[in-house]
Length: 293
Image (cartoon, rainbow, N blue to C red; front, side, top):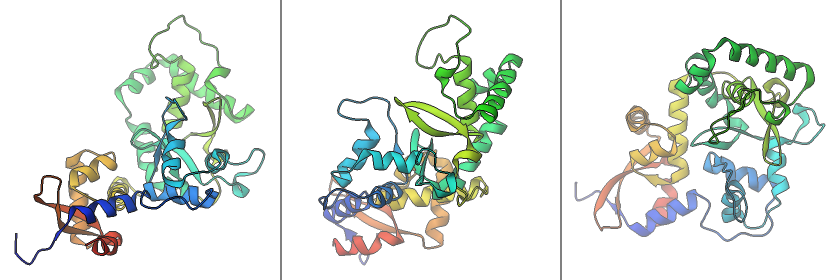
């Protein structure tokens, strides 16, 4: 390493990581809906978890950054206002897959479209086995027709026609069909009732202003890696891949391209063992890193 290359101290790296994640300042008071939306946008997504002790994890992730806020404001940003047309709604977030089931800004919707297309064209082996059965294909068509005709549904609205009971993955066929239609973008989560998903047509859920054009897998991958590094503040390439929910080998060319065009800066940073290691920082976060020196 050249002697002229600065090594950023651990305190500066920590300060940047806390700042990027919105954990560096005490709450100023009850958070507004705009502040809630900004926090989710800053993180890229907030993971949903069905388990809870104090509250479900996605509410706690925001509380740790915003302090007091009304969870109903968060819910309205995700599910909108009952009876209000999509184009006039408060909905600015939606549910889909990132690290797991997550809440994502609708401004990022188009970057999930390649994943939806993957589900339509390939999908997981489990779903392929499900789709290979003619009776399940007929069920999918019947459910989609019912949603078109009657409106939003829950899995609980369908009777189970077999006696199987098992793990939480042992879904009844109607639940698997609903999830398949959701995964490929035909349906969206319009609401939750007692935390049960309420599925409706994407055309009835998406506000008119949402960009639904498919950027292609390369542009989507680049976007997710760039967003990951911005959200982390400072990291090593492997950590960027993990945050972007991507295998390291797949993320590597995106990282290299973003370094080459100046979007990412390569820096030397002190680690907890006192050694200097190569790290990457989004150019938007460089001023904060310099300020921490």
